[in-house]
Length: 200
Image (cartoon, rainbow, N blue to C red):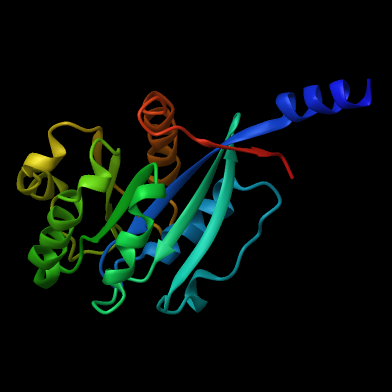
């Protein structure tokens, strides 16, 4: 009897886990995005001051629960020597958040070239992509319409993709992006099934 009750408890209280990679060039605001996301959407999390965030060396991990699913975020450093680590996680991830510093026009071509290269990986075929045009609170940012016009990669045609303006520092655009991502990973779950975990 105990095993039956325990089995039902595990079934009722389990969460479907989806792994989401947060990628982009160094200084694009990936860790700020993750931290603000946790502050806005993770219960009981007050977080650290966004002014104290330093460049990521390696990877930061965060998680939030949205309805019946859990998103596990992998924020991987964007420095050139760390970009070789990204591929190690492609086969496990269910979605990508690609953060672009929309105030850094000098590195825009570099950022989009890296996005195109990573989306060309066979391991990421069909994976939903949220492109975050970050730092919209800065006066020097370029129009998001320009970014959308430049995202004509063939690898984006057969997948869900959304370009969204955001300010990770102020929190604008974050919740809309996460809600869209949740819908996409659930719709894509037959192609890339979630991991099942008991709620802890």
